[in-house]
Each structure stands twice: as structure tokens, then as C-alpha cells.
Image 1 (spheres, rainbow, N blue to C red):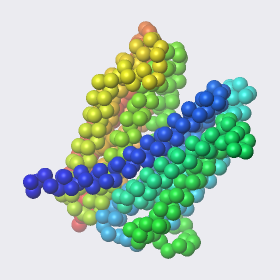
Image 2: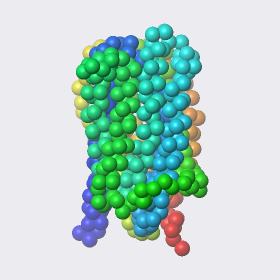
Image 3: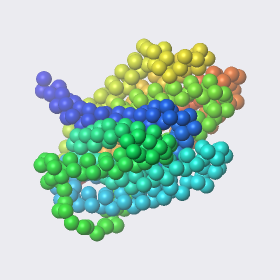
Image 4: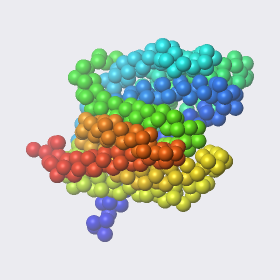
Length: 454
């Protein structure tokens, strides 16, 4: 009983952080689903325009998110060490950096016309995509501010503000879409552009909600600095960038490699592409619980590192990795048990169904391997080791899996089904390599003295 109690307590603490994060992540994903459904019912041209625009601003958003996640890493260690003043001092600097990042990616989206022109779209789709992107661009600074506030509370291990703001933002997006896409309640009918404005308004609503929640909650006020203007501190901002830029680039380049692979599969025909999209979407949904548990584990490990408690670090790592892998195994079991039901939710086409069935089996294997990689990567981030996972991602995906995808999927394969399966097999080989290298690094890190040790 004495051995198991610390692990039970750690599991409860981990769950307390993870479940609000799962809700928040699902709410944010749900916003994209609502956009797709409501725009699709308006017109296929507007839906296509939104899909194009979304794939342009999403990588920029993920780059910003990854950079701001460094704040949660820093705050977690400071929280464990009881450095209350440092926790207060970092928030204004995180907000300054968020304004800088948001002010940079916003114009990139607003002036995306030349990039859209390279895609050789028809004039109507290009105009709709640009209108959507220009509307979303006004909200991107707000997303950066939201992530700065969210990562501050995440480092403390308090995720309720993130969950509440995400759910309310999701609910608000539905009537906003209805009013601005379809022109209801006296608003102009704007189609894809209206969807962009609905997204932008929801983006600004999120930092207001989470900020209000933080200021209204007594237990959080002590972690806030005095309400006054603070000058930017280049040293603190540089530290956030040093830790966060590799995370942001990892997110950015992961999206990039899947985009390249999607373009490769697109050359194999519509059925292959549709089956791949189903498999990718299923993996994307199952990825949300994995990264939620992984991020919660990183916070708990960061607290233990900050308190210089080596035994608690071991307990947090073992509990978090076990929980993450169990989520991966449960997802794999689900995929192997009801693949037909999952695929039927997307299509009734027999050819697509046949290809997707084979891919779902590969996704099941990918997920369980990825669960180990996710857990180990988030543990390393808790130790402020962010460059190594970035280098491993570049090696595993861009230098190994991508060329292997071309060889297995485009050179050796004789049918579209074989080609798509070969590409997913290459992705599995890539995640295997990444998992081995990341896990080796974590084992090596855990054998060393803690950063705060004498």
C-alpha cells in the first residue's frame, strides 16, 4: 500500500490537469467541424475556399502555439521551486512576445494573395479564400494572447480557465457562423468570408474569457503581477524563444510533412486520397487525448523538477507514461474493433472503404507507437530539452520517412491501394525511429542529476 499510494495520488493529480485539457482540445477541434458542416451546407465553393485558407493559417498558428508552450515549461519548474515572483514576472513578457508573434502572422495571412496565386485556383475560389484569410488575420493576434494566458495557467497545473474559454468560444462560433455565413438576423451574407469573421470574433472572445476567469478566481490572483505596464525584458523573451522555437518548428514541420504526403497520395487518385483523409482524420481525433495527457504529464514532471525531488520526478514520469500508453492502447483497441463503423461515418463508397480498412489497421499500430513517443517528448520538454526532439523529428520524418514514402508508395507500388498503404508503412517506420531516439534520450536524462541539484 505504501508503494502504490504515491502513484495513485500522482494519477489523480495528472487526471485533474488532463481532463479539462481534453475538453478544451475537443472544443477547439469541434469549431473546425462546425465550420466545415455549416460552410458545406452553404456551398461547395465556399467550403473549398475555407479548406484552402485553413491549411494556410493553421501552420502559422501551430508555430505560435509551440513557442508559447515554453511559458508552461518555465512556469511549471518555477511553481515546483516555489518561485512565486518569477511566475508573476514572466506573464507580462509572455504577453509582449504574444503581441509580437500575433502581429507578425496576422499580416502574413492578410497578404496571402501571392501564395494563393501559386495554387492556380479559379478566380472565384481565390477571392473566397483570400476573403476568409483576411478576416481570420484580424483574430490571429488574439490567439497568441490566449495561448500566453493559457500556458501560464497550464504551468500552474490549472486547466479550468482554458477549458471554459474553449467551450464558450466553440458555442459562440455556431450562431456567429449562422449569422455571417448565411446573412441572418440583419447581418450581411458573406459565405466563406463570414466564416472567417466568425472565427476572428471567437478568437478575440477567448483571451477575454480566460483573462476574466483568471482575474475573477482568487486562487489564481496570487500568480498575477500588478496591473500596470511593464517594459519588455529581452532576456526573458529570449529564454522563451530559445525553448519555444524548437517546439513551434516541430509542430510547423510535422504539419508540413503530412501536407507533402497528402500531395503524393493525391497523385494516386481520388479514392486513395479520400481513404487517406479518413485515416488521417481518425488519427487526428485520437491524437487529442494523447497530447492532453502528455501535456498534463509535462506539467507534473516540471513541478517535481522545480522542487528538486528526484523520487517524485520518477513517479510523475512513470505514471504519465503509463497513462499515455494506456490511452494509446485503448485507441488501438477501438480502431481494431469497429473499423467498419468508423469508416461508414465518412463514406459508403466500396473502393474507398476497402482502402480505408487497410489504412485504419496501420493507424492502429501508428497510434500505440506514437503514444510512447508523445509521452517521452513531453517529458523531455519538462526538462527544458526542446532542441533534441526537434532534430529527431526532422531526421525521422523529413530525412527518413518522406523518402521512404516515395520509394514504397510511388516507386514500388503497383496499385493506388498499395501505394497509400506503403506511404503509411513509411510513416510507421518514421515514428518507430523517432520513438527509439526520444526514449533513449529520456532514459539518459533521467539518469543524470536534476537541474537544481548541487
